[in-house]
Image (cartoon, rainbow, N blue to C red; front, top):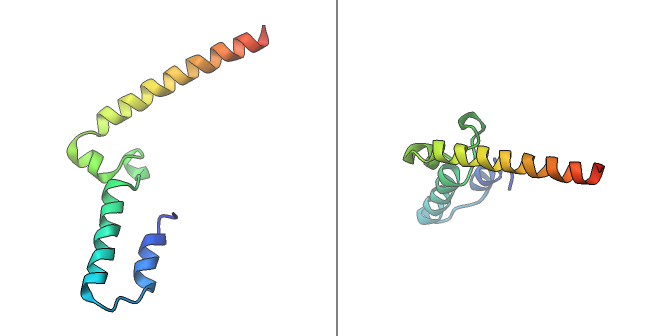
Amino acid sequence: MAPNAKKNRILLENHFLPGDLETHIAAFVGHYNHQRYHESLKNLTLADVHTGRGQTILLERERTKRKTMKLRRLQHAKSAA
């Protein structure tokens, strides 16, 4: 779903009961804080940064990237031989 799709849906939908609006706003805030990656936070979620998991996630991503690049080099060397 596009980043602004949830926000736009909240703005465009008719909410007949206050509880409906509160439910949609809570869902948007949950998505924004726990699922949406923020480019300015090195593609981490707000919850990752807030709970201190950000550095651990970035280190794991770097390890995965190095491992993947090593595997690709080996595969390329095998195919070139």
